[in-house]
Image 1 (tube, rainbow over the protein chains, first blue to last red):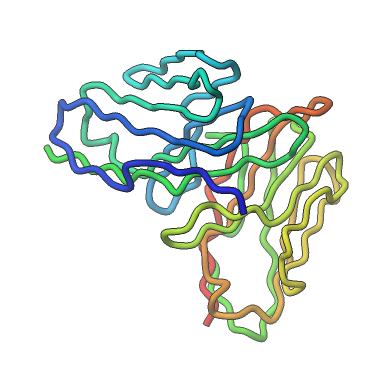
Image 2 (tube, chains in turn brown, cyan; image 1 turned 30 degrees about the vertical axis):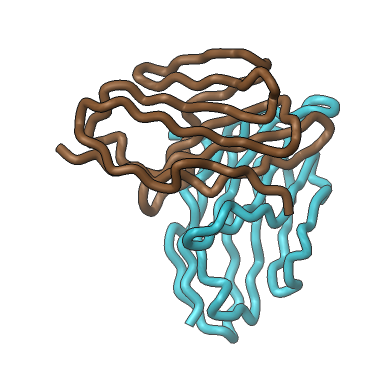
Length: 111
Length: 115
């Protein structure tokens, strides 16, 4: 089925560093969501994007809805140990009940 | 607290058992979803209910049987499962308006192990 390409697959970074990850699709989406999932828990919504070009922040997190509507980016500034987890993107098109999920970026922060 | 609860959080069952997973949403949404999450694979959409009607069934084996008695509750009935069905089962809900849907919120999941 349809799938989003999310990269990188995993990242090991030092505490205090900035992090960037992205998702690309062959399809145009009208909604992008970014989630974080910790072990044994469900995904928790971080940021929702509804308009091409939109840039939205949530604390140290910033996400952008790509102009082409086929990609999205998530940045984390000044990472801390509790940022550890798997970050998922998800995209949806109008007229569908489905969100397509990326394969996730596994983030590890070294103190 | 995301407003979506799931029980049980963990379940171990034999291949001949029958069990049910329960999901409840307290967000006033009108659509609910079951997803399967296996290691190193994207989330797999299993079923979608909108206004208590099933609108999506992604070729899921009949040993999985969903039930949506009202807009706040969703069940997944399990019987004669296989070991490869072991996974994290996630419930989600959203508000569907016309041809678009808003953000999906997830429950904490049920970790299922089939022996």
